[in-house]
Image (cartoon, rainbow, N blue to C red; front, side, top):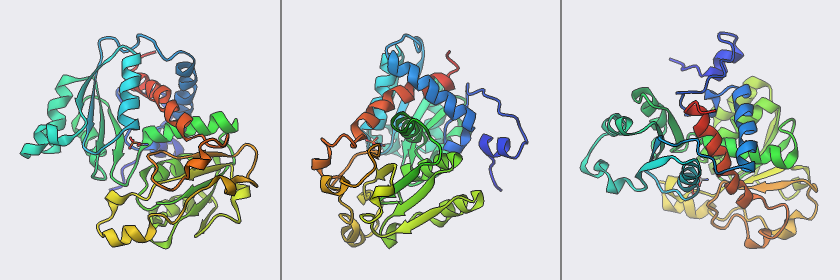
Length: 322
Ligand code: CP
């Protein structure tokens, strides 16, 4: 059975955009209508101007990280702290009763009683949707396996709009691990709403999965697949680099074959558009040489900072705080 998101329902005219985000979960970027996404981006502008506000006083947020994280967990926790909320949770499932064999169902049913909202990262695709069907508090998917990472997408959209002045008709290059990269899956779905053209650059083994290409086909949007991008780099508005994720490979030999296939260097940026920006969800390994870091077109650390403001906007929206 196909599960329809709010976005699907609004697109098909079955519901009007409700613009009520309170108590809703954010599992896939398509859980939010375009209007709702833009509302969060506009709210993010306000939090960037004034990040320390006592809006979450009395609220408890649980951060459950079954997979490692630096930016997502700490930017959520920074966002909550700056808003006066309290945090419970774990950064390693080995320190929770999961290590004793507790199921995800039982963990969510229990933590649900202790908090007002759950932020969860889990290695299994679909785990966040499963959690959202059990919990009575909102769930924010902080990454479920190779599937989706919608709060990252919202901060990516914020970063793109801030640097380009628009989200419309941009030429987006996605480079690296497009097969397992949840950030590119979510971002592609989101940017399709603003008629982006996509250039997918990856080795054959790490191509964008067919289901996502079908998604674009159904919308009549253009995408091109390449093995290399040095000859076409001048056309990019955004270059979205990604790490080849060792942890997603079952065969280490397959990982070794593709791990360093793309390394962006400063010398490659000479003929790029003046306003082009390089994004990366981070962490990086070798795919962006450190000589790029001082180039004004490198935006990945500012992008990570935007994560704090964007997550403040998401938290307040889902908790219904004005
Ligand atoms: N972008 C991102 O998800 O980074 P972390 O894995 O450090 O959270």
